Structures are given as structure tokens and as C-alpha cells.
Image (cartoon, rainbow, N blue to C red):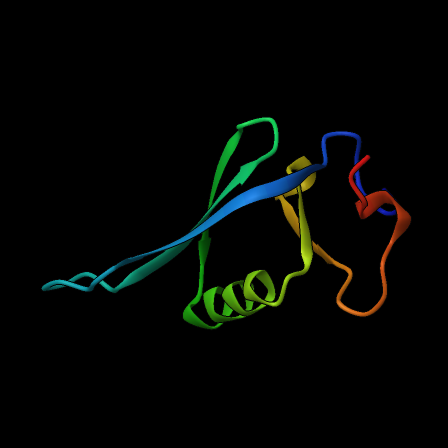
Length: 88
């Protein structure tokens, strides 16, 4: 897929986790991404980032995860359809 490494895989599951703040600790957010090859990737996120990821996931976009270089979540087909996103 254009602009992505060879390790890039389609996302099949996205989970958002929230750990509430306790005495002396700040709340924490993280996103768990499971790719089509069943690899799990957990990345820390801000509340705003979690909101954006959930909105993109609910919008029916095709999502892909590129773990190279720290990780990049790719949201495709926001407008139009890329040929590499169709299943054969």
C-alpha cells in the first residue's frame, strides 16, 4: 500500500482502554489494535486521540497498522476507495 512498510496489515479489531486516575496517578488511555495476522499492538493515546480513532473506526473506514518506526494507524477510504483496500 502506498506510503506504508511491508509490515503493514489491515486492522480487524480496535479496542480503547481507559484506566482512571487514582491518588497520585493520572488517568491513562491506550488503544489496542489487532491486525489480520492476529498481532496485538498497544499504544498510549490521549483522550482526544482515542475519540478520533473511535470516530474513524465507526465511520466504516478501512484501517491498517504499520508497526515500523513506532507505529502508524492508516485510515483509508475516508472519501473514495483505494484499490488495495478491497478484499479479493
